Image (cartoon, rainbow, N blue to C red; front, side, top):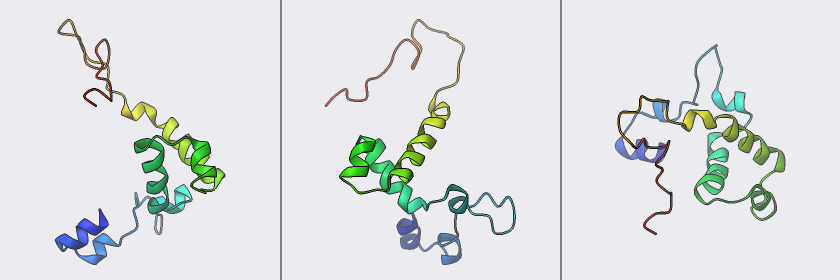
Length: 107
């Protein structure tokens, strides 16, 4: 995102600003999490997109075990955010309830 922002000419003060909820002076998301977005993006790409196991991230990719487990816990703890809300059923099929699209259809 930062590379795209630079390419599009977004002012550096915006592009380089550390992510923050700005809850108090000097607060940053990365300081609260204990790792940078750049670091966690690498793990998330492998864990979620490439479907690596935690053991593979630790042994083969040489990520710190404590870091990998912390990221995995956060992903699990936020699972509820990726669920669709309960909705009124107005047809015989409801997406994500009694009809689900398999991730790998069409491959």
